[in-house]
Image 1 (tube, rainbow over the protein chains, first blue to last red):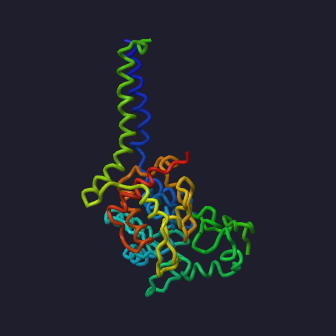
Image 2 (cartoon, rainbow over the protein chains, first blue to last red):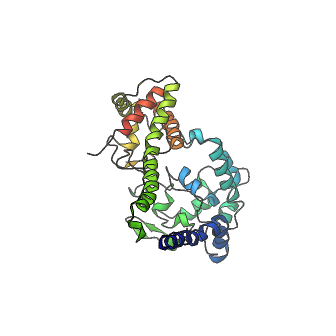
Image 3 (cartoon, helix red, strand yellow):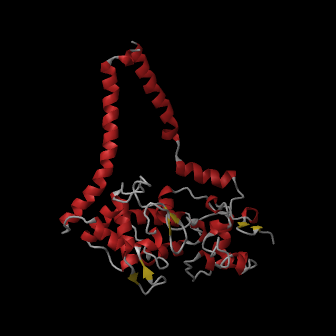
Length: 187
Length: 143
C-alpha cells in the first residue's frame, strides 16, 4: 500500500510539473509581451532558438528587424557565399529561418528602430550589410575609428554586441552602449 | 520501506540502467552510423592518422583568407576553444571528451562537413576523407 502511495505521488508530481510546459506558448507570449509591456524596445528581442542555433553559431544573431524583407530574401538565396563564408543550410531549415526573418523584418515590424532603419533605405536598394544602411551610418558617424576598427575588442561595426551590451534583447539605446576600453558613450 | 525489497530495487533499477545505457549507445552509433554510410559510398577503413594530416593541411584560396586549414578556426589542439577567423566568435572544443555535445548529431556533422570542407578545401570532402577526420576527432582527448 505504501509503495502504491509513493508511486501515485510521483506520478502526480510529474503531472503538476509538466503543466507549465504544456500551457506556455513561447512564440505568442514573447512577441505580444515584448510589444506591449516594453514599448521602449528598439527592435524585437531574439527568441527563435533555431535562428540562434543556425545563424548565431558563427556570428552574433542579428535582429531581423534591422533589414527589410527583400534583404533577407537575397541573403537566404546566397548562403553558399555568405560574406566569403559557406553557410549552406538544408532546405527545411532554410525555409523556417527565412520565414522567421521575413515575418520580423524591418518593413514588417512596428518597433521604433526597425521603422527608422526601414525608412532610411531607398526602396530600390537591397542592402545586405546592416552597417551600410543610412540610418546605421547616421547613428554611428561620431564614433572615431580608433574605438571600432582600431579597438582589438571591437574590430568592426559588425559585432554589435561588443558595445551594445543588450543587442540580443533588442536594446540599442545609448544608455546600453559600453565601448570596451572606453566605457559609456555619450554624445 | 518497500523499496528495500530486491524486487522493487530491480523494478526501479532496470529501467534506469537501460535508459542510461541507451544514452551512451546513442553517442556511439552517431559515429558508427556515419562511418557505415561512408563505407556504402566507397570509403574503406577509417584512418585517424590520415584524418590528422587532413586536419592540419593548408589549402590555398583566392578568397579573403588565402591560407586555409581546419586549424585556422579550430586550432591544432582540439581540446581547446577555437575562434571564427572572420567574426571572432568562440567555437567550442571539437574533442568529444572536453565537449560531450560533439559527434552526437548526424545532421550537425553533415552540415559542418559540407560547409567547412567547401570553405577550407574549395570542394566537398570525399567519404573517405570524412571518415578519416571523423575518427581523428573522435580520438582527441586531453589526457
